Image (cartoon, rainbow over all chains, first blue to last red; front, side, top):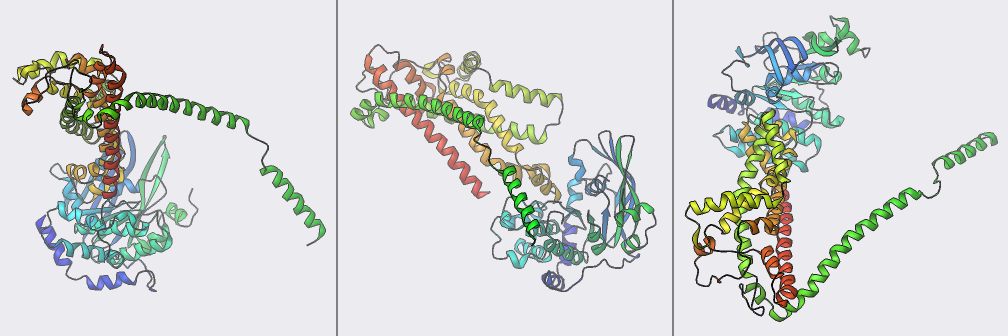
Length: 297
Length: 319
């Protein structure tokens, strides 16, 4: 733990470039586009034949995706295809559902996250999460950001860490004078950026985002997308989205999921996983092509 | 625009006007809402008549005695009898109830809502708690007489009352309100949105940290309101106290008694005083003193309810 925080602190020494990029935000002419992913990036997370069950319900069937460091990996597909289930199994949020069960293995730096000695709490400190609806704590803006580091016994200067996290989430300038105010006083888009600041305050390696912009207006959505683009300099991001344009704009690689409605069950499975540019311009599977061209069904 | 088009538009307008226009008075609705108002007023007026009646009867006492009615202790003489002894008894019982039932009840609620696995045992506990909340208070009195009075005696705290003191009464009342504390606290905990728990777990908090830092603080306004209202219930209850040996007549005023003597000795409480005075042979007790004691009891309950609302508003603002 201590080691991880130090690593992160070293990383916080180069934020200014990011801040400038973040503060350009909506007004700037910057286009957000998926980068050209580099195959030399290390695979940080390996989903290997992952099955997700809820009781008897087989939600996801055998998903294999390698997730590379400092890239944005998008999971897309129709409702009920299991992309959120896969995302939530990565940081063991599925553990919170009594009946949920994960089979196969998810390896983080080669370590099986579902191994018998793994502490899910420690996993979540390294693999943070941003949820579909902004869900700040009913506390002050400052406390929202500082809670994670506080329970992780962060030893450095908390004020600096809070400022740093808010700057990286491109929110600092809007909230610096009202850190003690309720997080609920912020707009939806600001709340979601606060949730991103909260997620990165614990210096995770990986940030999981479950449709982070689906409850936001287009301008707030654009800000979140730009922010993701900045964040991937330091973090590995996995995003679930309904919005194909969003996946095309921000992600380096895309996994397309679909759902089998056979035998009365709706079991999701991975159809295709490749570089985003390839998946959207030259899909290998006809199912993918149907979906991205809007002829799904 | 041609005349034909104009005519068609006029015709459409008329049709729409007819379609969305009012078609007379909805008598069912009028009748029903009227009936509801009448029923409401009936209920309220019964309450108002009751309070007015008691206030009128109590008025001479407050006029003659003023604050001394509240500060005087028990007496056989109607001219000097006051409710102070009863207020002391009620306050001591309420304190014991709060000290015992709040921590246990809130802890049980948090366990039931946050930790308990969804199995038969949990369902059994849940159902039992709900059933206990509906058990008549006199049954708790019998429980107190059978268990808590001997328990207090066995612990050497019986004092001059031989166990029939505020300790036994407080424990009995605590057990009586415990199911209600559990139910209201559990409801408050359940009302905390799941997304707040997810947010806590998402930044690497343990279950204990999520509960301590987020769930309980968010549920606190609801928990406080519920628990303070149960205190009001404990203060108003009479039947169990009568069973477990509250003093219903005069007993030696604890003039030179120490606090320990007061706790272990005989005691009375506000509703019990109302009960015993209304049975006294001397007319003044039943006709003017009992109503005055009722007013004091109502005032105490009113203050407690006010405190509950104040606490809720305060904690809600603070988040």
